[in-house]
Length: 250
Image (cartoon, rainbow, N blue to C red):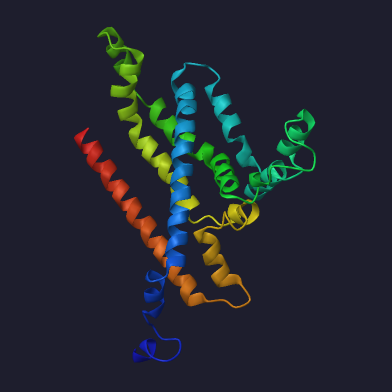
């Protein structure tokens, strides 16, 4: 047993000490958290009206529209990201359109569209939008519409009914949708590798580089990965407890 705590490969806390005293790793982690929070919030705001329309508009084609929404998932994740790389490139669809319309002089593309934080957040938002819309759609579709009818009979406006009935009852779906996009994006590394460049470099890229470069540092990489796992597990437990308490009081 003592061999586990001695020798060159024994268990030590030096890597954890270096991690918590490193402004580089912690700064990169908070940068990734901030980007993931922005993406998650914006995607939830965009997905909620879409899910609301599909669930409560009464259209008979809602399941067809839902199928159209999730249709991109029939293709490879990597192909979808590479498609955005073509769209956002210096000679991509957007810059070519700007050249054609004269809004941008030829040979002077908007280079900030690709290899930037903007590109990473845009592509992540596109990739995870259906995942966000689905749990919100389920929570709204299971809503008892008689409550809305009763609110209307009592003189409540549609905005009041939404604020006091629809939104509170669909809130668990909103929280689940937020977690669906936040948890995977905070450790994302494929999308930043393809469209992020140096400014879009994220925490997951650092973990991959520590394990996969020509001079790997598995000890530090393991610390970064375990720290991320611990943070995600803690957040999931907090949100789950919050939803249980909210469901019990509601």
